[in-house]
Length: 340
Ligand SMILES: NC(=O)c1ccc[n+]([C@@H]2O[C@H](COP(=O)([O-])OP(=O)(O)OC[C@H]3O[C@@H](n4cnc5c(N)ncnc54)[C@H](OP(=O)(O)O)[C@@H]3O)[C@@H](O)[C@H]2O)c1
Image (tube, rainbow, N blue to C red; front, side, top):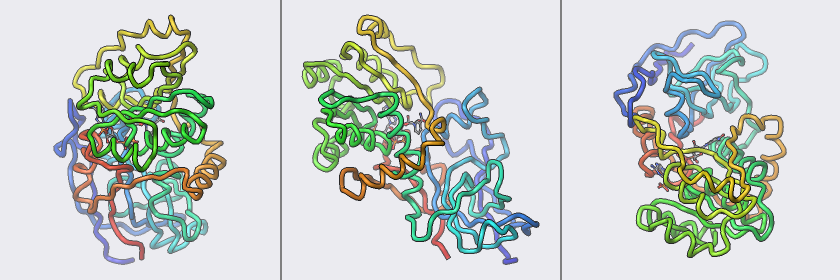
C-alpha cells in the first residue's frame, strides 16, 4: 500500500441562499488499506452539475440529500490504482459517483459503484456529451418535447452543456431553433459555431418584446433549463399543442424563498399545451442506444460541444459556483489528476 493522503471536501452546513465555500470543510486524511473485494480509485475528473445545490438540501427529491459530514457527492471519472476485486483491474478507467475527493475506496456496489470505461475512451466525454448532459438533452427534447420537422424550438440556458446539445438535436430534427443565453459571447458562439437560427442575450434584451418579434408564428417546443421569468414569458408565445420540457430551473436554485409560480400558466389551457418535468435517470435502460446516436452525430460533425476544465481539488467549491454565475463555458469539469 502506498502512503497516500486523500484531500476531500465534506458538506458541513446546508446552504441558505447562494451556496458558498463556507458550506464545505476541507480535510486531508490517510488513505486506508483496501479489504477483500475492494479497489482504490484515483479521481481524475469531477463533474459539476447545477443539481448539486439541490442535493445539499434536506428535502424530498429523486436522490437522498448529501448528509452533513459526508463527502460532497459528484459524478467523476477515475482510475483503479489498487484492487482486491476481480472485476476491476489496476489501470482500468472507471466512471461513478466518487465525490469531491482525490481517492475513493469502492467494493463496486451502492453509491460508489463503478463502470469500467472502454480502452481508449475519452476521460471527459462520459461526463459531458456522452454522459448525463448529452442524455438529458436527448431524452428531454425527443421524449418530452417531441419536436417535429418545421417546428420552432426555444431553448433556455442554450449555451450551457445541456442546452447547447438540446438545441443541436432540435436542428438535426429539422426545427427552427432560438436560444436564450447570458452575454454577447455566448450568443455569438450559439449562432456562429453551434449554428442555431437566433440567440437572445437575456441580460440585455427584453424577452417579452424580442420573442414575439423573432417568432411571429409562435413556439412549439420549449426546452427549459432556467425557469422563473424566462418560463413565464415563454408561456405567452406558445402555440396550440405546444410541449414544454421542464429540464431545470437554475434561476431559482439559490433562492432563499421559492420563486413565484408562472402567473401565465393559463396559456397551457388556452393553447391545450403540456408542461412536463423529467429526470434523465428514468431513461437508464435506453442510455446505450442514445449514447450510440449521440456518438454518431458527434462524429459526423452535427453536434459540437465545449468543456470548461478547471484544475485542483482545492477549487471544488469555487468551480461549483461558476455554474450559478454563468462563468462556465460548456460542461463544467475539474481536473484532479493525470492518469498513471
Ligand atoms: N432533468 C434532469 O434530469 C436534468 C439533468 C441534468 C441537468 N438538468 C438541468 O439542466 C440545466 C442545465 O444544466 P447544465 O449541467 O447543462 O449546466 P450549464 O447550463 O452548463 O450551466 C449552468 C448555466 O445556467 C445559467 N444560469 C445560471 N444562473 C442563471 C440564472 N439566474 N438565470 C438564468 N440562467 C442562469 C448560466 O448560463 P448563462 O450564462 O446563459 O446565464 C450557466 O452557465 C440545469 O437546470 C440542471 O438542473 C436536469
